[in-house]
Length: 237
Ligand SMILES: C[S@@+](CC[C@H](N)C(=O)[O-])C[C@H]1O[C@@H](n2cnc3c(N)ncnc32)[C@H](O)[C@@H]1O
Image 1 (cartoon, rainbow, N blue to C red):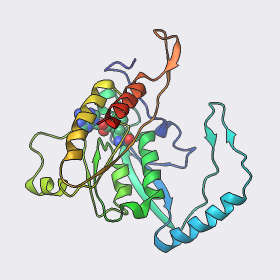
Image 2: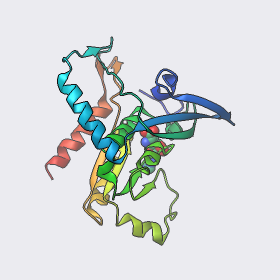
Image 3: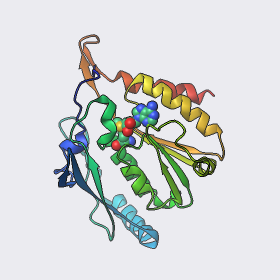
Image 4: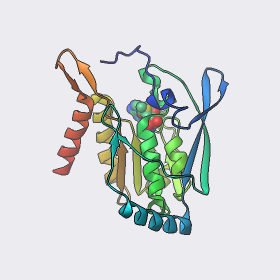
């Protein structure tokens, strides 16, 4: 179990070089990394999707897995549309400051946004627990308006911000269900937000962090189980 003072390091930064994320320069105690994202805009996207679906249907189903059983995927080749974002982040933090790193759930969310670019074109989006803000920056390449939030100071919302909240039709959150208390607070708030203003869709991504515990003598992720219980409970509402 993670204790308050423990230092935590995101896999995104451990595998940064291997995954094509380049380290820029150090800024005080922080690093600046460059995230280069390929995507396909407008008509080019339609053409590309057609080509890829034709290619996929011709390919043999020959899926490889790594030693952990994860799929080894062939990455799509480079596209004409590229977003390059420099993000300042810490290399490791304690539990309170995990938002200063980029997490796997954030990269998954970015991938989802870019794969569904037109879906968000007219959206007003609210991100909860945005941390470094990478997912919001990526969302801003397509959405009409993006509000990125994290732990906020009481009374820091202006009247104009509150007005914008009523236009929100998409809520997104990456890697914010890593402790049961936080998951409870997140879903309590989320239920309230979903009922306010326009009809909304919420997209949540998370990394299931498995650990071996002596208590269970097994590899488990209690926090993920708790998250799934919440989803099950909400289905019955
Ligand atoms: C693991 S980080 C994820 C950051 C980012 N979404 C990502 O995936 O890279 C969890 C984020 O939730 C935020 N958070 C934790 N408790 C919160 C609270 N009570 N209200 C708002 N944000 C909170 C943290 O500050 C942090 O930015």
